[in-house]
Length: 293
Image (tube, rainbow, N blue to C red):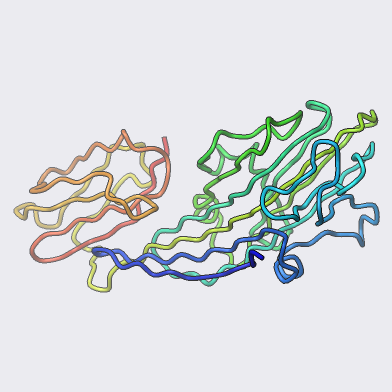
């Protein structure tokens, strides 16, 4: 049986160290359910979310193995219902450097289009406030790794949800616990449809740490955040500098050598967080750079 697992992998690359912390939840391990899934049946005694074997007309099997989380494993969803479950994403602690945060899972939807729908929210303050990931994605510069989903109507088989949220915690501050809330809402018309089913969650954290001998005094960067045109007033204008731009997976996506100018054009980059690494024979500087157009 596939188990709930947690691991850290360390990969050392030039000047930047990488740490990955990943949770996998497939709903076939009781430990993962008890530790990280919250189905509130106290404030909502009629909460329709269940973990089990799907046994409906359309929802008749999980994405992998036997179990999934579903709006009732047997019955159609009821009218005038609002039911939620929460996934707790416990994080290993702030390691420093650039951060990448990924929410990834598979889902099926079968509902009355637009009137019955799903909602996904995130909280960094233990549920005191919530951010709608589908309607506030532009506000927090969230990056869709798959096409942005429509959580209503009927999907054509299993759909893949994958969203990077690193800008969310950069803008609001680090939190050692993230909550993801999944809510299904129905209106007053009975349609006898299956609802919403989800499976195989991946909750990933990446960090890119800066080497100890880096120096941020050799250059200042402005504006930052930037639309892509950067001024780089070097402390020593007579020194040749090598410049590298590193993305949030550790890949070098831009580099140039013998750079002496004060202006660099990065308007071709997408919105997000990057590293600007500048090095010469005397020193190395790595600075966090935000592209926000």
